[in-house]
Length: 139
Image (tube, rainbow, N blue to C red; front, side, top):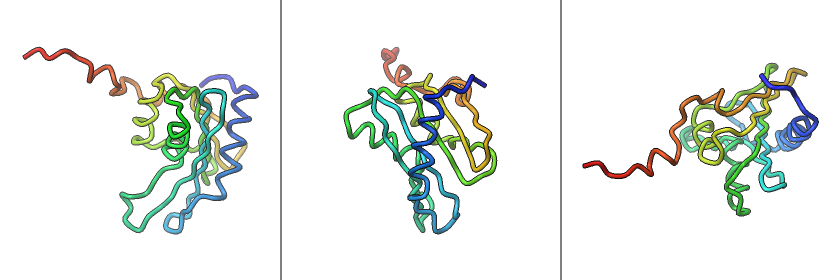
């Protein structure tokens, strides 16, 4: 775990701010996320769907907002959920996060006071990243 900085807490506050806007009629588990990219903050929330596979996680929503604004290098992401303990990103979100910076800082919070800060490399070691697709054909 890494030392918690003031910028970490500020990004977490943006995630908390948007969390109440989550659409979670099925799980009642609201998640908010905020990413820091290009000196700007982008927010996202989970949006559930009756067809569960169509549900969008907050992390991917925030990343999509950053990409739509023209940023494809994400420095940090903060995630906050309705659990007492810090909420960690799901596996799918970790893979999407790796696309935009496999070493990004990940700040996690919940309803309680505990905050965890780790690198994405710690959450998703040996991620499948862009470089694997750049291999020359050896056939």
